[in-house]
Image (tube, rainbow, N blue to C red; front, side, top):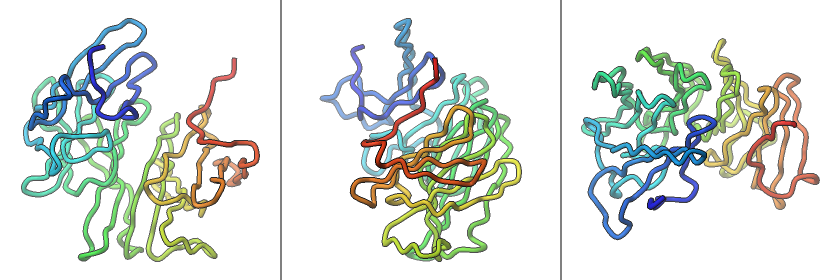
Length: 275
């Protein structure tokens, strides 16, 4: 391909045909710009390069964007490539939704970077968590949704109930009705659980905005994203607090969890379609 990945794991599928990732044309040069991205179709060989040169997009404190974790100079495209999300952190923090066709801002949501923006399976909206300082040491992170047209909706109000809230890796259910994510709160609402650094699997119902904390632990809110089954009923998660790491299968509909550790040795990465 003649491209150099910034990090090997930094890629996303836009659909069943196209991958997108951050690249550096010449690894011996270190341009003071946000790194470009490339979309490839590994089946046809087609490649499309996208320069990260949007208004108000700044180079991060540590230099150009180095990973697809939505840092200070990362960008996130929708599958059509018509819309792009990026952060603006000067003079304050906000998230911008930019229309590449009209070269205009569709939405600007104030708040510090919380998590990687996630487009819904139908690409009609994206979900993003944003952080707000409560004092010098505590943060409150909240979920927001932004439609393709730029309408902003706040989904949670954790700050009304907790002193500190951290939202970790998340995934949409394939039906677009739920978010599964890691949630760390102070005070901790899980009885009998006293992890020094720990988060728990939570679900957000998009229709009702109800959040359910399952009290299934993960290492922290930096834990690997939950993995949904294709029918949007089950989630697989991995807890590396234990040795060996625990692997759980969660039945969302029945509200039950099953320990698969003795059957699964390793890290679950996805579901297979039955032949």
